[in-house]
Length: 295
Image (tube, rainbow, N blue to C red; front, side, top):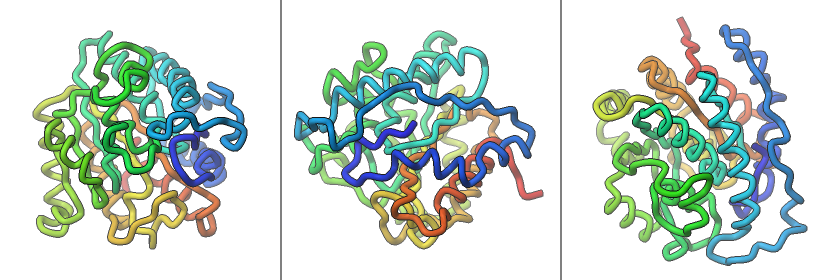
């Protein structure tokens, strides 16, 4: 999903190409999966030729159109009991992925939980956003807060119950979104919690969280959750993040639940990367969430 309209920095639209170059197809096939590529599900002009429009929700119509196409694609894949792995692109694509996941779950009468692995909350609305970038509003919208155009994307109403959302690795939350996250009832394991409890204990709590309340899990993984030492090629690199080993362990353990039915990996920006190492790590993360183990 080569969409970068939701972020300030260009380059994440090239993320899918970088991940392909890093061998995603070959890696997944080597662990027993059959892969199908879904390209060209939408067409957009490059960002420089478009008008950003609403300064509190930039490129709103373009993102809504692209994510509506993505939602349909994701729902169709899930309807065939296959696994949609969405490669971004900036995190605004979660609007489409989560809408497609939610629609399929509604049809099958299943309860969906979201593991949101991200340095940021993405829980702003037009009332709280400091930037107007929709990648910072996507999860709040999916949980039923914010603009009607985003809340009602693909089908009317809330896509995800915020009480079934679990954050891991958060370390940069705006004051307005922090307040909304607390009101909404999301569960958050910040980097401070990880330092306090230890990572393996946090992983155990995450597993218990999902097993106690949902039927299936969607994993939304933003590469900026990782420390820039391990993932320099991302739009908003912040020191003090997860190590590559911690992120791989989390994906391996969540896969062991057999509850993960969909995933997305976003914010790979090859312009900012070094020797494609962020994309290479994204491939390893995808393999772990799809069942790869070291032994």
